[in-house]
Length: 623
Image (cartoon, rainbow, N blue to C red; front, side, top):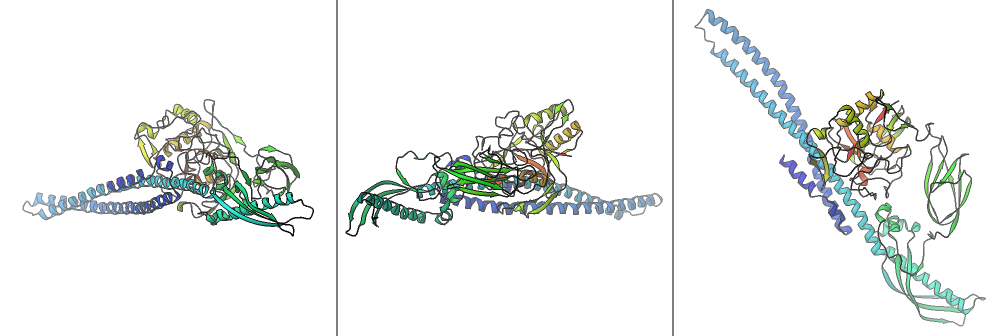
């Protein structure tokens, strides 16, 4: 147990909100990540050794039990022989049976010694299993520490880019132009000065890109960036007209890079959540020369033409219906959300950035299912109680696991799954109100209320709190909050109760069903795309008002394309699994776990008796 205590100490010292809040440089954070990754690798190796040791003890225990069976047979045989010899002593008192008695005594001692060894070995095995459970919990805590540091690293990268890009520099430039025949000297002079400014700005912008710490990464996206150059000061040092009608000008300029933080995320290919809620000096009145083709002035209107391969579709732009294709509409420059839908076809969604008039051809693919999108059903339970709202999920096939290649080892290999039957699944996690109805009806007492309480994630590890349970998880909740501090045993008890109360078959979702429903036909890390972005879900550092604070009321964010809420973040959800011995795996991430651990394929294997204030569940109903 001392070994576990040492590991737990490592985890406890690994992580805290205060550390993540520190204003560290990119190099500082990279060093921290490297150190924590080394800890994680060593910890993982120790966990594997611990698991192997537990398996070895279990094997030794089995061998001892076999030996006990043989020893007991020897004892019984010796007892029979001794009893026979005692009967002979009755007829012949002089008969010496001491050797037979000694043999029996030896078999008794041997049998007892093996039984004692079994007891000792069993206690060792149980101790190892307990250590493995605690190490698995601490392993996930350390992993969350690393992911939290990665979040900080990306913020530090944006800080560095912002500082490097928005530097000032004094520039001297000379330029020569040929005046047009019909151009006045004044207009020729103005044009020469303007071209000199553009020439200086272009050279300066090139030098800024070249001087970035991540210049290679930034250059990849330079053409789609809105980065520009601000002319802070300009003055003519010398100018003259030649006899051939040429105008020569030499100018002194003070230039500054103009990159907003939101543009920084775009330039480095990062999620925009790293670039929000920062105060910038955007109100400084300076002249700006934009060298990017992407205009952002909303007073400029461009024509967007949308065509598709079907009739009677419907086009939504920024959530507003514009009718069916062929569609021509005038929109302000910038980014717009475009969705084209038709019943019986899979919707097409994309972001369109307008910097010029554009024509889009959208291809809609026929859907594999024909039911109404988001169709809902609900059972009425005994006592006229409304059951959970369920969404029908169609039968279908999908690829399960780490499709994008950025996941953990237990998400691989990617496997094709074929779900032949449709099923209903609760559109939200089971709420405090719904769980209270079950508790009151069944007079049920949760595992947390029986003993030990509920674990909470504090300073980088799961810490048990005796006074915490589903009624009081350590933060403020209401009846619409997802129930937490429930073990898998508690979740299955709810499932058994609602099955009986509804006369229907309810279950916890299998891993395959859960991931299929959570993906909603997508192969990206999140149902809306590759990046978690900001305020799309309640997970650590995801930009919502509940992030790293508490759970959010169920249904606080948008549904996925199957009509489910909160398949990303809020609380980890219990699922059943055939891949692990104890059949219990949680999926989906939580309010205090990093976004990378809220990806659709992330798995966390836990003991079915574990409970915490970041784990809940949803239910499945068979058709």
